[in-house]
Amino acid sequence: MTGTDWAGWQQSWDRQQEWYMPDREERFRVMLDMVEALVGPKPRVLDLACGTGSITSRLLRRFPDATSVGVDLDPALLAIAEGSFAGDERVTFVTADLKDPAWAASLPYDTYDAVLTATALHWLHSGPLEALYGQLAGLVREGGVLMNADHMIDEGTPRINAAERAQRHARMDREKAAGVLDWADWWALAAADPVLAAPTARRFEIYGEHADGDMPSAGWHAQTLRAAGFGEARPVWASPSDTLLLAVK
Ligand SMILES: C[S@@+](CC[C@H](N)C(=O)[O-])C[C@H]1O[C@@H](n2cnc3c(N)ncnc32)[C@H](O)[C@@H]1O
Image 1: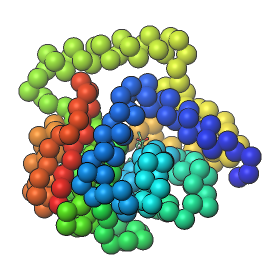
Image 2: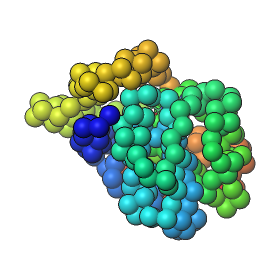
Image 3: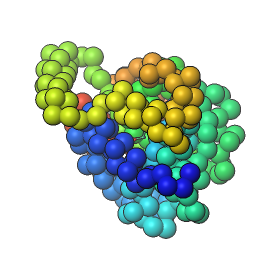
Image 4: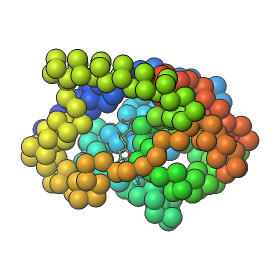
């Protein structure tokens, strides 16, 4: 795989994701602030549904003594992650399906200071997500944290939700007209790349365009995490569309 511009793929992934979430970097910053505040600057992290390793790259830039295990099922995004971090002994990647009850058996460690995840768990329906939270409670050490940054929708505020959605989509339409790459465009580029074409074909066999899931409210996430065994759970950051939910074991 020599010759592939992994940094270029990381950048184009970031731009594509930022089209959906302009506050993405701010969200990562607050996530890492809370990591430092609760478990310190040398954490062992599980980067759950890591994609290209976006959380891991920001973690290691800020905390060079951290270690990270990235888990994902997408062979193309994992190829970019593995290419980007090749030779870095602080990082391990694992291929696993988080809906498989035995997924955690593939991990290299039994416990983590922090489980961090972003823009991913809405790919799961709430039943499997509840089961996953139960498993994660067993992987986070006492005093450790789980943070989930994602779309969390409060069905009790339909007018606010509709207004926020309309404004967000108007901005996205303007940026798309100005040439931004969306999800489908980005995957078309990956499919045309000589190195990523085969893993991209496999990821479409696994997921299709996108897996189907739910976006329960921040209250649901906090309550479900407490029921799973976390002592405290609440949002520590929110934008009009997204929430960063922090749970402490
Ligand atoms: C939109 S990407 C976000 C990736 C990364 N966290 C980020 O913020 O850039 C969603 C990720 O969730 C992963 N994912 C979704 N369902 C999964 C599952 N059942 N098992 C493992 N990974 C999954 C996808 O493969 C994808 O990499």
